[in-house]
Image (cartoon, rainbow, N blue to C red; front, side, top):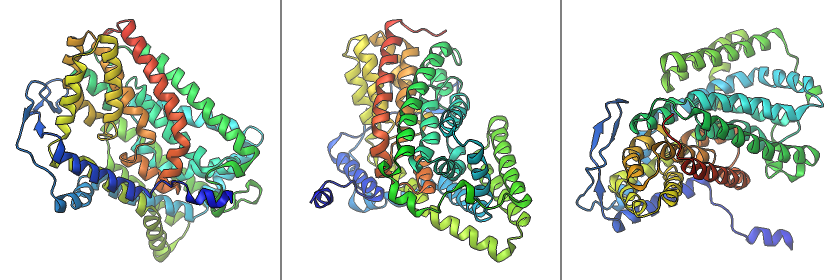
Length: 467
């Protein structure tokens, strides 16, 4: 009877359906919200195209027609083609590495070394990624590492949600509490005409509190699952994965060790290239493709074996890659209907009428909501900060507080929003349905939102300045 009741309960639709419903709602809004646009100009400080806050004007209504609405999938796929093909290529390269047994053998060796101390894996690995995101905005670069973290979590007796959280929670938190990240704080402070990376002391305190609370929640859950695996929402799915037993692991042969070394070198080269030369999708895809060829040669896979492993990898990651394009279709529809800027202008008009403390909170809430529409840090900064920076002056909010509100709003929901390409790509590689991930992570995110709110209130209360 209980099982029958459960079946009748509300079930979150597949992420494809959910995103298409959001696209439909945005299309309807294009008939309701008066169309308007801001002019874009080049910011002399950052060189990026940003909105001119004084230029908002209404334009002729451009409601999204039915045919245009259904073309959103194609439009989104076109706009997100870079990350889509990146996911396909990297997914194939990782699949080739996995086919050699090197990842399984290496992870099991690590699991044996940590026997009895498995919980230490979570704070160590999460903190490393958190610091990278805190300093350089690492997110997309972590996509190839997801299979490693899933296997490691399972080998330690946890579940795939713990493996996913070590990456997603760390990347989102690092963005939210950014200290030196050039993609959100760097751009936002440049637009707000604040000294580069000023207010770092406040941000470091924010980062320590945020990370400590997040780790506590994840580790508490992991300990519970280790004690009783059947409590995991991913219990059935994880059972279908290859049995993870550290004592029955494949032999860690010389070829497999060399394959892991090739992977480690590739990750190191990628991090160096991102920091030193600003590498992005094309360059990272290229080095992972090179790695896959090296691994295939080391393990004598042969031409046919290499091709089959590549095809299997692309097949397995197809859903995650295509979700990226569908999610981008939401922004495409808002732009086609000329209502994205109208939403921004309407929010700014409301904030000008509020007291400074309430206005700071309003900016934070607005940025949190805006991130579901524009999940790009630099993109959101370019659209919102030219308006919110002068608005802060009018309402008595310090510009540094406005930037704090922006970065928290921009980062926290990156771990859950279905419009985030990197997140959906990670979930695709992890084999975790978005609905299960979102339901599991939501309580953690609500606590993080609460932490963010407290720090926005504190920043405004102490009149956090430029230094």
